[in-house]
Length: 71
Image (cartoon, rainbow, N blue to C red; front, side):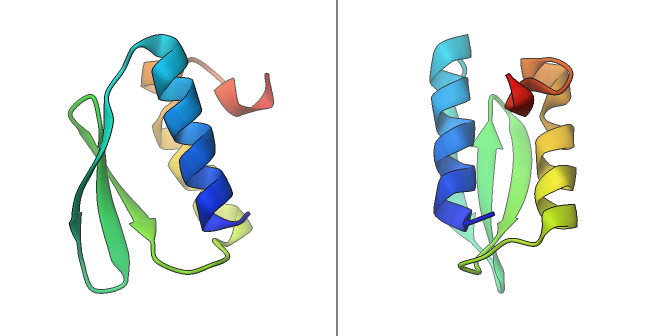
């Protein structure tokens, strides 16, 4: 999945749920984002691998619900 598409998906869902999604800082190969206090490292590559994308999306399930990205 494209990194920009992943960030847009998370940001749009955060807006729908009334949750803050904000950039915190840049790291070596990652950017650190915060979703309502939960820190999320997102790789700074144009294309994020399928397994990495799945891990990031699943880490957000407690905030958005089970399999929220498939709705």
